[in-house]
Length: 414
Ligand SMILES: Nc1ncnc2c1ncn2[C@@H]1O[C@H](COP(=O)(O)OP(=O)(O)OP(=O)(O)O)[C@@H](O)[C@H]1O
Ligand SMILES: [Mg+2]
Image: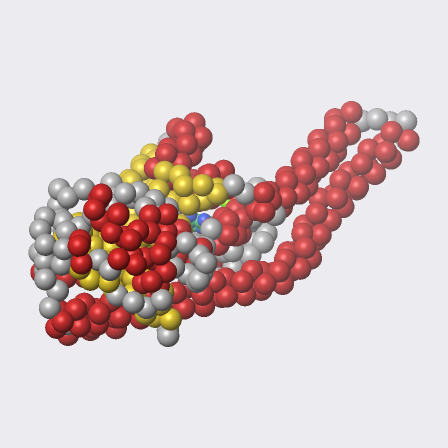
């Protein structure tokens, strides 16, 4: 109990779920049980979900999408009202919980203890401890300990939920503060567009003058027209990029394999890599899971970072010409995607303004790639940052939420 309570007090919010699952297993093993679970409910009227499970190895898994309310509404209401249920054999189940008795006779454990879970002054769920192979006694002292364990679980979950809620508010604030960034963006955008428009105007003015003087000078006129075409394209590209940046609301988020997504991007860039004599390596950790996101937007992110990495290597004319795209688990519930290059590192002149619009060191650069990438990543709840490599070059990393059931539940709650 001492260890459990220390662990629950210490565990960071992100790791609460994993820690609880660990302890659920430890307790169940110590008691020689077969299957245990924790159920949670956000508020009255909401569904009760199975959020943590443990089972003896080789013991049948918990039914997927198991919905306790469907099987035993009366019993769920009874437990959620704060009443425990324990039985050493099925015949001990109180007659008023007939639905539980029916379930237990058909599927259930020979002995079980179901204990309401309190968090923040209300019942937020329950824990069930089941023995299926044989009947089992539940001495009062043991029940006291189980109740205390479940209370510790409950307060850890409560703490996790309030931290999630705080994070959600912070995200909202970030979005709001980005709206201010938007007005800056619009200001620099009009500046950025006015420049090529001015150049187009003066080039076309020159052509008009040449034509009106009856002295076309084809070579000179052609140069001016071509230059105007280039500037027009550039302006159109700025507009297109800005539009794609604001298309986020039309996004389509699903659970997707991050490895597959990166393979798609690699396919898109093989030609470019070959042309620039750069080796593009992909390292996807076997533990890397599925993430939640908009596949097109996320491809855009990886592509932007890979193109920047290529540019960095080309720019530095590095002897080692390798870009490594790596996927590895980050803190619990998150996966990190990183792109490392062997370029010359970030130019000090732009280092503090990398994510600002139109900040670029490239002749043909627009200075929007990182801004767009960060905006997409943050739209997915993640973060994007750059770190210098110990030997050479830079690594850009962004995080994405893992698409497991619990994580989805957590963000829904938040
Ligand atoms: N991997 C990198 N190594 C070194 N510098 C980088 C790297 N990635 C980005 N930078 C610096 O950050 C600047 C901004 O990058 P960003 O992707 O936003 O714009 P860009 O690449 O210049 O233009 P574009 O809009 O075409 O992507 C770059 O011009 C470059 O100076
Ligand atoms: Mg770029």
